[in-house]
Amino acid sequence: MTTNGSLASFTAVFLTEAPKAVLSASPTSTPAPIQVSCIWSPKPNGDAECRNLLLSRICSHRNERLGRRFLLLGDSTMGPHHLSKFLPQLQGGHHQLVNKLKTNCRNIYACELLEGDRCRSNEMFGLDYPWNDTWVFPNHEAGEGPISYGLNYSFCSDCAGCYTSIRVCSLVNESQTCLDHLNAANKTQRQKRRRPIVYGGFLKVEFARDVEMQSSAYTTTQENIAAFVNASYNSPGLVRDWGKPICLISTAHHDAAIPNVTRGVYLSNIEWYIRILYPHCESIIWLGATAPLQTVPDLYPQTINQTGY
Image 1 (cartoon, rainbow, N blue to C red):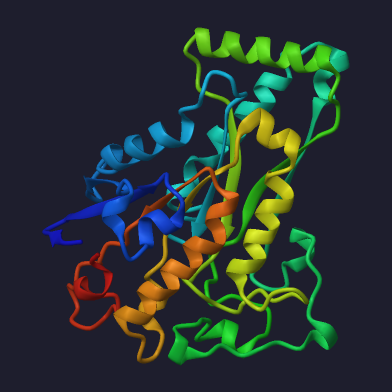
Image 2: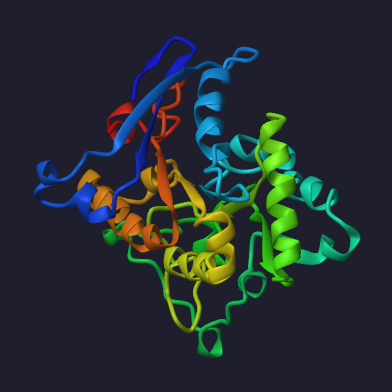
């Protein structure tokens, strides 16, 4: 990643093969992941190239499916005030379609919007807490977060402004008549070249590896989030109609501030993170972090050397 004046480069790696194909010791034996890049600037509409690049992949869908589900996982740069600010226009698409169905078929899917807070969000994900609320502290030598607020307050996050906001749907009416009607309505949407039907949301995951969210089953946020995605997005009926969700992931900004973290430890944690999440995603889009302009020396720990891939 490099910066040039007010511009910054942005790299996205699209993983469509199993993680062993991407990260194995013999990468030449399998297809390499697709890597694309774009340039953005803080000027008006300066994010158009990157936005279009991502949305074209999020929103495209195969004809035999109702649409796409997408998940954004990251910190505030992926959250409500940045990349996922496009979520409202996307999340409403499925309901616009359902509202066009016959009255007796409108309840084919039951959907709810889950919104989290900075602390103690396990209940929202259907997760319990460790016995006696015992919280395991992070191992900073292994590149684990949290490092500030989340370190001082158990089951809380360092990030103050990246709250989970995700739509979860379940199939409640498998009447073949309704399923046929839903498919026909969606086909009409496509023929009229309207926006593809999608739903999903933003999941707060600040680090490549952290212990902010812990349950009786797992001590890391990444493992608990993967369990939630599998339970809430990958039931047989949902996968049949929508496919598994597309997962857009970004880390680095918080990882760079972990005391004495090394590039090797960080990359190892990325590999671990991808391997955990990949079975639950149709594909993974890894969004490479950009280094902020160093207008004030040493103001930000995530330098070009630390964030470049």
